[in-house]
Image 1 (cartoon, helix red, strand yellow):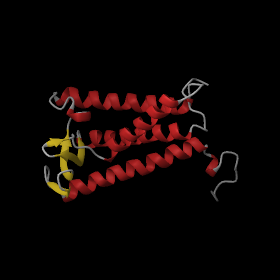
Image 2 (image 1 turned 90 degrees about the vertical axis):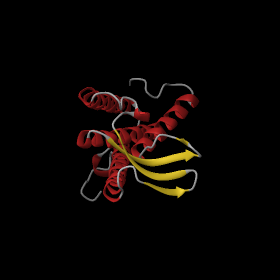
Image 3 (image 1 turned 135 degrees about the vertical axis):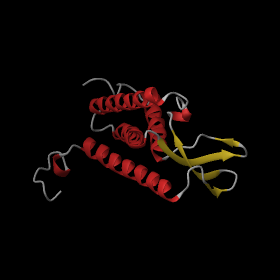
Length: 178
């Protein structure tokens, strides 16, 4: 970057790992919050727009629970602090795991950044609205997958990549303490 004179760590003195994580976080959180904002401002709650007949719709819902609506029936005095606390603990854990990874573990760094970005996107919703905006509705006939959002998608992709890397890893544990 032209503002920096140090090229030891690349752009603006930031490590490669930090640049990957910051870039992914910026993109994911902005895209997630922007899509949720657009849905919230342009669609009535529970309204559905068919995109692919019999398979995919945009359906605006608000999820007071966690994944798949878990805890949605719980009292708000318990549910909201619990889900925010779990999110913060998960975010802290992901940062700890990122810190342990070597700079060369690009795939795992990216995967954890995807999970982190998704967790932060949904945490923002919980803090601001007390619930999460979901709008991606995948279904077949009368069988609906629970509605989700971009944050959920990035979490799922990140978990999938992480599982793949760990299942195919040979030799050293990439998360072993340095």
